[in-house]
Amino acid sequence: MSVWDILGIEATGDTSAIKRAYAKKLRLHHPEDDPEGYQRLREAYDSALTMAPYVEPEKDERLDFDEPAAYDGGQTALSGGELWTGEEIDDYPASGQSPAASDYYREPLLHAREPIPQDPIEQFIDEIDEIYENFQARIDPEAWEDALNRDIVWDVERSGELQYELMDFLEDHRHLPRPVWQRLDDMFHFTENKEDLLEEYPDSLIEYIMSQINGTSELRYECFKEHPAQDIDIEQYLDLREQGQYMLKEGELEEALDNLTRANEIYPHDPDLQLMLGKCHVRTGNLTAADECFGQAIRLAPEELDGYWHRAQSRFEQADYSSALSDLEKVLGQEPENTDALCLKGRCYIGLEEIDQARDILKQSNQLENPHIHSYIYLCMASNKHKYGRRHITAADRWRSWRSNLLFDTLMVLRLSWLYILVYLALQIFFDLHPVYTWLLIAVILWNTWKAIKVHWVLAT
Image (cartoon, rainbow, N blue to C red):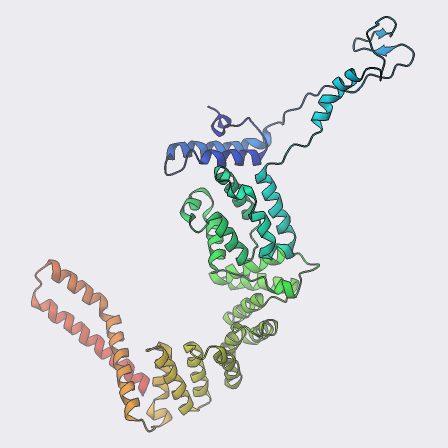
């Protein structure tokens, strides 16, 4: 049986026809229900795609239905080269004299000129491709609604074919805003069918789609509405932005900086790009350039807090504590219980040697998230009586401090000893352990308790 028999089509060089046939057959040979049939189908599909460029298209043999030449003196050429006259053959009509004969010759030609209806799936793909090519329509979720409500989208019998064509389209047209990805997920259930999709399509494509739907790698498109991307290669920009993001996550800072810098030269009005560029500069130690990028992000999106937060961290690293406090006030103005921002604010006051304010802020942060580990550590540092002096502590504060210290030390001991305790309990259940093992466990816990108290003492003094 040939690969074309398995796919159920004639030999063809049309890859779209091969893909549609494959998608149709997938409904009969699902990987879980018929693994052997699926394997044969997949091998036939791969072979057909390989053979497609070498399949010669069939040539249509069309009859010439042109009307006979006009009678110009009694002679008309026949295929055999002989000449006939109207007088010799009485029943041969002159041109234009017999409507029936004319209709006989014209009818096939008229039928041949009738347009062939376009396949609904091809029509759907053409429609979303047209939306994609119009960038302003592409980033507008409402522009997709008509296409996503076509009858073919709801056709259960052809859902496999449609899904295959759509995934093939998305593999090369992936720069879409998150609301559009979520709308596609609502219609085609990508998240719900993730495991099935991973069996049929490349893992990288499916993971990419999931990250866009969930927003874990979201890069926003709102900036293009306020600052339209005119006279630039928008696809190149989006590729560079995305590659820069990926390289930054992977820690490939040189490649990330190169991609993000080139993207910035094309289109500098994207706050997400400026934030990534700033983070890249921070990690490469160029804090001055990082400040400029974070400042640009703030100018582009003054209502968003990310720019203020990252610039505050950068300024703190440069010991510019007053400027860092100014940015932190913006963050805490909208998120007064942001413990990380409160902790950094307390550290700024430590840097300014305003210890009482630092203690109050760090105490507030630690109480909001008890214990907030960083706030607790810097609170202990600010409470160092040898470095910053002693101050009056109320009975309520003393009790709260003692309770926090006890909780912190207990967590430290458990973190150091949990594996020993777990192994001891498991052995105690299955074996009758000698008491010496109990004393060994106690010794380990006491030793770890001493280490936790020592760390606490170092922090406090």
